[in-house]
Length: 255
Image (cartoon, rainbow, N blue to C red; front, side, top):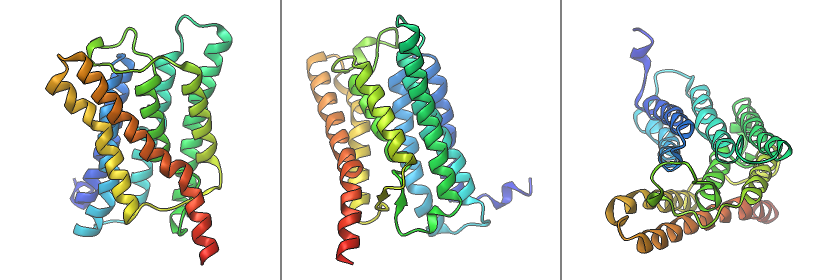
């Protein structure tokens, strides 16, 4: 029990991130995609808060960075990759198509793990992120899956607001995210206005879950509201994904 006496408040937020990621995986395996993605959005909130809480209340050890990377690997590498594979793989598609789905899922896991390992090995000391951060990659994939993923055979259909099932678009996004995470393209660290932007994106992402409990009986209103909120969250996320490197380049040129 001596080890538990060293657990700080920041560690609890970090553990909550990983544990919610694991629970999300169990829901993905049960084809309950909306609950899974909602849990992963909460995981991102925990990931964003653990550093602040650790600074605010202090830490009793130096393994926080390692614990954070392990939790992130569950929530932002394994879970999004599994979501893509379960939604599109092993269904009524050809062997070649299923292989491409598996390749995409593998690329997401591999690049995510590589990205997190590189960050833990010294990347955290840089003034910028080297490659797109894993949470940003995961958020992009989750939002794309909500709008263009599969819903057939999953939980109660009335909770789905998918625009249309676009497997190749989702897979292309997965490969693009994998490339950006494994790349050395500089991305700005999230602080100041970027913190507000990321918080707003997450808020818009979880709004459909709240809306579902409020007015899901009005299907037209629910779908319109949820698609709009998710679309806005995706736009805000893409501002960082596509605009982050431009901002870093501008900042370096100005400096």
